[in-house]
Image (cartoon, rainbow, N blue to C red; front, side):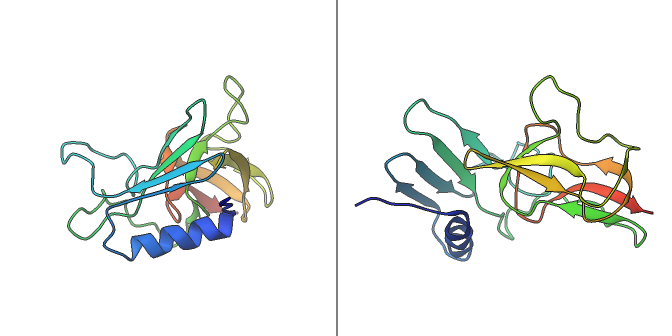
Length: 165
C-alpha cells in the first residue's frame, strides 16, 4: 500500500494527534517517515521560542521528519510578551524550519529596522522539503525578529513584529 500525504492532510493529522492522548506516532511511506512525539524534552532544556521545537532530520534514505506537538498544560512553553496594539505580529502559517535568507551565506530577507511592503518576502519556512516563502501582509518597519535562523517553528508561532506604516 502506497501512502501519500499532502500538506492539508498533514495539518489535519497533526491536529488530530494534538487533541489525543497519543504520545508517539509513526507513519511510513515509500519516500518518507513521519514521527510525532510529545513531552519527551527534559525539563532542563529552555526553548527560545513560544512553542516546543520541531526537529527535522534528513537521513540519506528515507528522509525523516520528527515533529513535536504543541505543549500540554503540564508542560507550558516560555511566554512571548504580549504585543502592543500598534504592532502587527507575523506568524508561522505552518509547522516548519525558519530561514532568514534564501540560501546559506546570502543576505537575510529582512533585519530589524527594515522597511517592508505588502507582498515582500520576509523569510522562508521549510516544510517537508518544500521551501515556502512567507510574504508580508502589511507595510511597515520590522521591530523584532523573534526566531533564530534554522530554528523549528510551530503553526501560529510569532516570527516577527512589525510597526505598520
